[in-house]
Length: 139
Image (cartoon, rainbow, N blue to C red; front, side, top):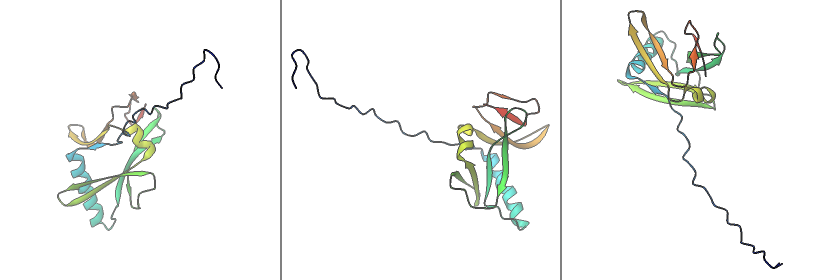
C-alpha cells in the first residue's frame, strides 16, 4: 500500500551486545581458610564432621541485618553458591545462599587477631552503616 510521500523502511531489530553476567564472589583470606580448616579438624576429631561453613545475612539486629556464621552438616541447598578451598590438604567448603551473596558481593572474610581478641571479620564494601555494638549492619 504505497501512499505518496510516505516511505516505509523495513524495521531492523538491532541486538545490543550482552554483558557477561556479573560473577558473584567473596574473597576468603589465607588466615580465615587456615582457621576454618583448624576448626573443621577439631569438629572431625569430636565425631561431628561438618560438610561446610555457612555464611550469610539474616534479617534482624538493631540495624537491619546480622551476619550468619554456622556449621552446615548437610548438603548444599539448591540455591546455594559453594566455594571450595584447600589448606594443606584439608578441604574447606563454604555455602552462601543466593540472596545473601548479593549483599556480600565483594566481601572479604578474614580472621584477625589483636589486643582485643581474635575472630572472623566480614570486610563488606556494601555496608552503609553499622550499629554501635557492631553486631548488625544496613545496606
